[in-house]
Length: 167
Image (tube, rainbow, N blue to C red; front, side, top):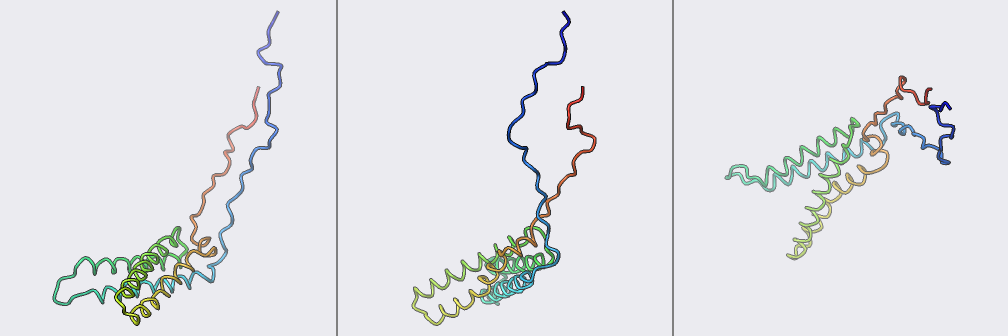
């Protein structure tokens, strides 16, 4: 008796449908309205960092590290503002990070001055929170997130690969 090399039992298939690959959502056609506003607040954050560096400087001493740190953060804020305008990937993370650092620093300064009993200085410090708070709120909004999202590269299906079994 000759045996067949092919099995007569049908192949078992899953009752669930295969997951469909969805194309990535389309990138917005133009720059959203909130992106320039986020960049302007990023410039305001950079200006506040530079003002802080100017306050910390001592003319008779060489430039110490605590003056260089706000200058570096100001340069990062400027870079984040430019990258948000250009729509580069993850630019909002840079802008949000420098805003959070300044926000926490100003809040800490307000608490310190409040503990020392300097109410007028606390008010001025809280007024400076407008820059980093506005930058943070605008940078994490959905239109800016979509504008600066990483472009997802999808490969076209391989034309040479066969999906059905051949005999």
